[in-house]
Length: 373
Image (cartoon, rainbow, N blue to C red; front, side, top):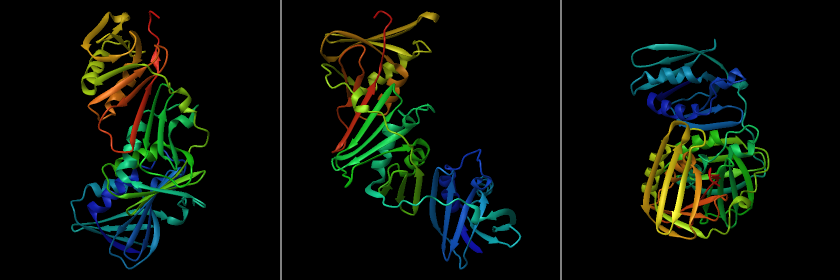
């Protein structure tokens, strides 16, 4: 088994695939890349049992075979080379020779037969979307996802596909993001929960991509195919919470804000907030908005006053500044709308501008009870 490949081309691919590999695997074989060679094509796989990524590279070769090579060691070796062709020669004694323009190197390999195979997706449903649409949907929702092992369904993003459009939801019970694409339809209705790790890798690869992604899914697995790559991952089992039930429908109090000005103000005042609650206070009265924060334990206090566009009753409401910053920072509009009903009901943030046709974003922040209420 022998093949020739560009060092930088191989390294670039392996660094993407390496994102799937865990630092402490239960099976030693999972510390490796699977190399499968046939004619002028090298297929590389990496897996953590939950997620498998496969991709093909063009190489110069006339042989075939499969081996497993140490992922960390191979990436570290490739990083040291300048751009040049490398010749890989697999020998019988479980040693692979790498030949560069200046030297020869040998490292051990394992049999490719031991490498776990990804799940098949029989009777899978299918939807196609642009890569940058999927990347945006992940980016808009993944930051709101929880890390609680006791609530595994909240540790992933909900994908809801039907003939009306696609909906993506992330929540940790304190904040919630609902991102919709009404311009992309699915032929069959389906709900599934995608784990965070493969989504983060997909988000990075597909950012700004014009390529088409085919998403196939059944009850237990999902597969993302694009260009010369495939991601196959096990879905999170369980029923997602009824997120629509927590979104208040009647919100008569409406505050229109300049997004960057509001973010800067919240960011600044968060430095004065209590380090446990991160509480920030919004007080609306007429055309006046007062944003304040206080940490009584350290006598830290900050307050900023604005004239604002506000319609509704005078009210005072508290939010976690950390969550508020994350949400505002994740929007790209110039103006945002904050809708509220009561100080003990969730506030809803939506962008006023900057959305594509068929694109909708709704962010929900649970309030923090103020000390004087």
